Amino acid sequence: CISSLPKLEAQVYEKLADAYWYSNDFASSMNFYIKELRIGDSLNDNKIIASSKYNLAWIKTLQLKQFQYVNYFYEALQLHLSQKDSTNIIILYQALGSYYKEYKTKYKYANDSCLKYFSKTLYIFSNSSFKMHASGSYANLAEFYVDEKDYLKARENSLTGLNIAQKNNDEYNYVYNASILAESYCQLDSLIKSKKTIASIEKFLSNPVYEPVRLSIYNTYLNIYKKEKNFEKALDYSIKYKNLSDSINEKTFNQNLLQKENDYKLEKKDKVLNELQLKNQLQTVKNKNNSYIILGLGIFGFLILIILYFLFKSNKQKQNTNALLSTQNKIISEKKLEIEQSIHYAKGIQNAILPAITDLKKHLPHSFIFYLPKDVVSGDFYWLHQNSATTLLLAAADCTGHGVPGSLMSIVSMDKLNHAIFEKKLTQPNQILHSINNDIKNALKQDATNTKQKDGLDIALLQINLITNQLLYAGANRPLWIIRTSSDSATSEFIEYKATKCCIAGHTELNTQYQQHEVHLQKNDFIVIFSDGYADQFGGNSGKKMMTKNFKELLISNCNKPITEIEQTISQNFTNWKNNYEQVDDVLVIGFKIC
Image 1 (cartoon, helix red, strand yellow):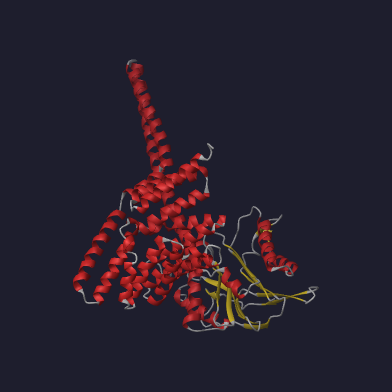
Image 2 (cartoon, one colour; image 1 turned 30 degrees about the horizontal axis):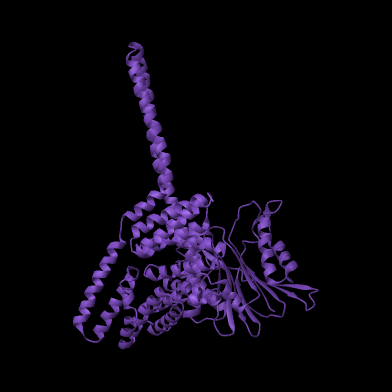
């Protein structure tokens, strides 16, 4: 019972924080969430840590507009994903969708990320036993479409969310969906419906919880009366809107909040500094006592004072040196933390840009992607695009370097791939490689006068006809492997289609042509494309590279297994081979079977 007391205390702090939040008292709310986080850290309880970080991130980023704290969302999401906690995963997806909607002017792909995270919540709801609680997700999507001025989709989603909330007696989401529906009706010139919808929720709007909704309703009334040319009432609601907005902003921007969190972060450092200060104070007292004794000893005291003077001077120099080192160490630690937070934030962006593995499995059910970055962010990336009802483009790419430089190169490369598909309307792999080679060289100014900028990438690009099993392949330094098994699984034939011996961009000339191969896939074929990270890993008993030969033999010996077992074998073999050696490069292996 005694051991459970801290967890109960954390629960009490969370409830108190929630209560203050609902009253728009963000300062008191943050104070209790930080106390909850302290307990979670002391217990190493991931559930408590994730909950408090989620709540702190929401107040910081969406209430206080401090967007740099988004890493709290990602940290909480990783903890819930590791625990397979579907309910809280949905909550974090909704929060990240709201975050990118709020800061879409700061990020190039914010709209895509916003729509992606909101859609993910509906996907989880639709495949779970609690789909009747999806009203909040429909409201988020509806609000997104209002911002995009797609009022028909906004009306459709808010009506769906409204009906679900009504069936479940969900007052909050009922009010939330109704406010968005009213704005949709107004923009679609259904002003009577808009007024009726507002009238159905006006009894709730006096509750402080619905202050943001009341602000939205004032704006809707303002738009209604403008369209009705009733400018007196429009002015009245314009004033109401401004007064309420100012009130909310006044509650929001409380400068004490940041200080409370900083106090917690510096608490352990302060403890150490206080101990050092106490030691320095004791030393000073001892020095004074020694001085009084020395004065009483006359000549001997005078000699000792001279000695002490030099000792004191030396000690002072050491103290100054230590103080300087302490300041420099503090600056280095702060810079290191900022860099780590930036890299983790970049990881979230890179993960959002990468396609979902479920998208690949939707088209190729017997497939896998083994993706293991060396650092937080990666220079290897995978890419896919369904360019027609029957064909799918799939790529495995390895950019120059790894970590931050590699990840920047991967984003440039994915952008040029998308440009070739969506803008130039290219479909043939060799044409696409020709296009991105020229585009990347032009983007990075890789001409005869620029000899320093030689970054590029290796890539294997496939076009797969999902009906006829016809495959087109073109590659830049990355081959295509096919392991063809007989119908009785007695024999296996290894087939390799070699890539063009030059990379994309870098030292490759403009207008380089890439060879294209056409392959007719057969039943039981096992197709593999990959980067060089797997075969180049050091390990084993001798500490040497695995080598392409051993990687090939591993695939051949396991090709008759189900695709999930092949993926597990590839993952386990890499872990066993690497053992205690450092991972030397990003690793990417993509495989699928024709069944």
